[in-house]
Image 1 (cartoon, one colour):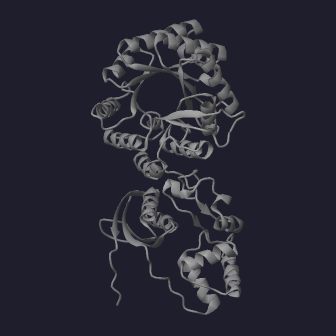
Image 2 (tube, one colour):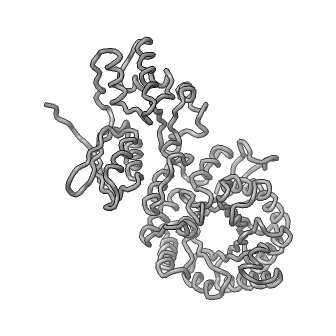
Image 3 (cartoon, helix red, strand yellow):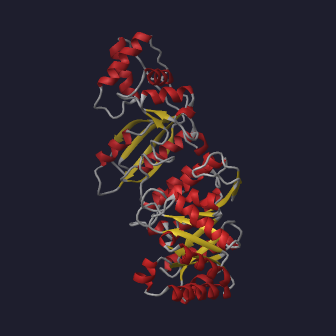
Length: 479
């Protein structure tokens, strides 16, 4: 839970203070991503890491869905009971007595009951009137409270519901014993002003009811709508790791955490461990993070255009909204036809190569002629330097960490295609296809343990890689 003064605002006027926490639904909403299935042990591992970074609530699953989901919820509740995790554990449920009984029997901290409240859902899904819906919702909440658990009611499709009726729903669940109401933008159809108005209206109408925001990303507005809800007074935001969820998913945990740091000066979770969590969920879900994903994608802190690199070399804030070090990452620069003189000089100096101004310009012209190269490696760059200057140039001995990563690939994929992708990863110096128990050996050189870990995780994220084994080089003997 954070409480902080906003630094800058998405909407106007700004609240004097924002206060909110995070519910992570990776284990429930995230597993509803097409093609994603977590094992029970994977869910336990994810839950423990979510708790370690500081999420306030973990939505563990809907026990009635399947035996393995029920077992995962049971074990996560057990972790809470044993004091292994501190986050509130939430079990999901339809507004049906058997679902509520299944969830409450496991003794979670809270049961979350959902029911569609838009006229669209009432007419075509539930086939009930508004009055009948209020009765069903109120009875479900009362029944759950009789089992001794706290209750959150999720108003499904709330942002497309009549606002007056939504207020009636809020009053009904509060009077029935629920202490939280989740405003679900189920198809991502809201805009930030609409989301904020809904939150403010319900807060004014039912002051004692705490509000959650559950924002889907169908139109790419999940983060903006979540922040609008927070500034309107919502005290919990629902997220998933890597934005997993139905269709295009919901608000990314990583994006909300970083945005909170930028806009409000404080993050609700520990930023430094987000990359570990990103990689874990990427491996277990099989859903790869795209390179242009904000904050956690491979390109998030990689600068290309010469003007951009020159600005970053002078002051990183010119083209970075948040320092990569806060996320345990480092910035990098590509060398290609967009490279400018300052970027080229900086990269060569990192490699221990100093050139005169005339030589630097000539090398730059040769780099720009290599217009078909997506990425010019250090070795290729030094070849260009040798051709231009006529001098023999060697890479300086590494003062960092050298490692060999043994890679196993999926049996139904071309090893060569995986190898080509691996060559594009920064810090990778050599890629070899081999025989035996492993398919590929990757040689890499990193400047520090953080960069080493980042590179290994990048190797693991390459499509077609099933597992890796890393060997650190302690000493090399030259002939």
